[in-house]
Amino acid sequence: MQEVTPPWLRSGVVLVCDKCSRTRIPEESPEIAARLGDFDLRAWLKSELKAHGAWGPIRVVSASCLDICAKGRVTVVIAPAGGAAPETFVVDPLDERQAVYDAIVARLGSDT
Image (cartoon, rainbow, N blue to C red; front, side, top):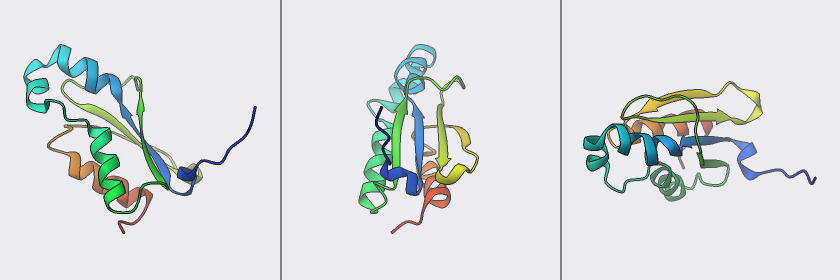
């Protein structure tokens, strides 16, 4: 086993539940799935972080299932580096995407 130091240990990592986005919303809430279309919250957050120079020390990754199921919502965990307690949210991936991004920047690093 080889130990590594990932770049996101400087600021933190964000987990986005893939099961919420790809399975639960389409199966349980087809009307919400139709509104979302092919929108991917994780990909959007990644592109925003890259656009503002924060990608690297902050990473957004998909998690297969976070066991927090809220109908029509996606579970997001913001986990700061350094042992601070993670924060967990359920969000509307379209209507609350900017609020999620702002929370990430506020908790994990400044927007450059």
